[in-house]
Image 1 (cartoon, rainbow, N blue to C red):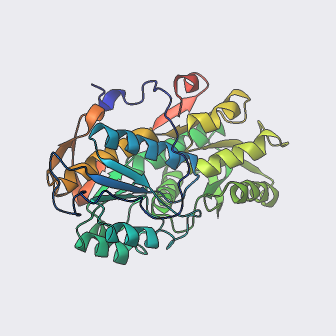
Image 2: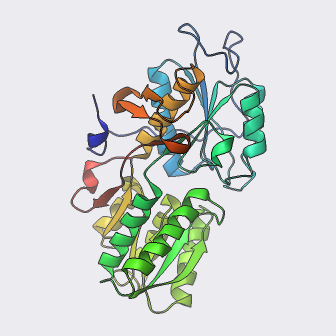
Image 3: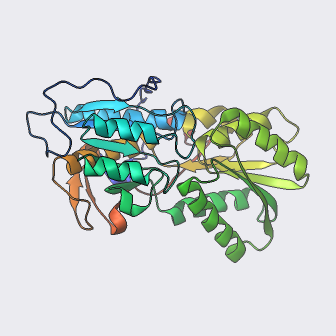
Length: 346
């Protein structure tokens, strides 16, 4: 059995989820259980994944992990979502899932509060709601699957950039959307850690690429134009860090301006090998989706309620316990570099 301590060992290729239609959840068999009925051994648990946006490689990987888990417990899987990661773009998909009687909805939230009315209506209708990657307010979901602690995610990125620039000089942050819950929590902690432990490093700007490749690419160019003494960039978003690396790799700044953040090995491999990027961090997004799916099943089946101290089995990942505020922790961030990046394929 794969344990949490070895989840970052080399993984086999994860089949990416094909881009789905923007239509809401697929047709359900008339004999599928109504939402919230607890399910049974003879009834498939219906689980719908709602990422921040479709076509995002990070969510393609995490949702593929969710699909694998749902297949293991013989449930019914679906993925729906908007094209763009806007605050209220996920609302109609939540409403439709509730109307269709989905047992469980797994959401990476674009906003901590904008979704709450729809989520609470879905919960009132019997749909269990699990957030993952990016949380809502705790009172409008049943569980949050946390990829790593906010402190750990912030610290690993600060440690990497300060090491790469010699702990001195100007840096900037290229984030996702300005109201993304997880991004803002990490940025706040990074600011605090820089101030407390790295007095010679100055954060001169924070910009937002909206998890769009071209916007992030353009924001990288603007950062380097606006701050000619910039020595490093942190991009705590897989879309942003890959777009920034793409810009740097063919510019005069390659090898002069350091870049780190949160990325996937397949996105960043070429940039690590050509010297654009030294190292970056992430968890295994496939494991994150996998864990979220098993948590959704445990809630839908009535095995747990989301209370602190509840425990459930998550397939190959083993046993997990619900912590404070209904949060379940996947594990610690992992650093990828030239020595290990070829050991991973996602």
